Length: 72
Image 1 (cartoon, one colour):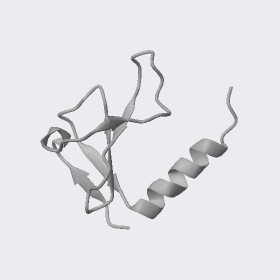
Image 2: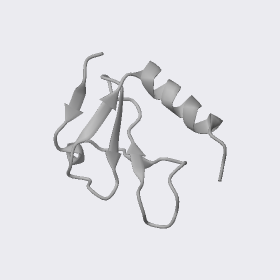
Image 3: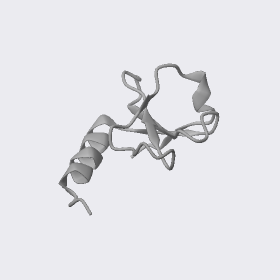
Image 4: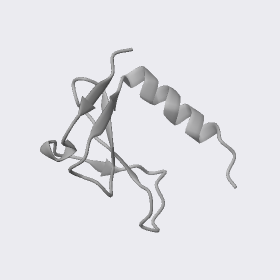
C-alpha cells in the first residue's frame, strides 16, 4: 500500500465531521469526500495538521469494522 499524507490538511475544503464522532468536543475525525487519491482523514482539533489519505477499499473496510463493533 502506498501511504499518502497531506502535511497541511487546511489547504483542502469540504471537511465534514464523522457521524461516529461524539458531540462532547473530544476526539473527532473529519473526512473529505471526493478526493482523487482516496479518503483524507484529519483530527478536528488540529485542522492545520496532517491528514492521512486512505484508499477507498481500506476506508470501506474500516467503516465496516467500526459499524460491526458492539456498543458499550
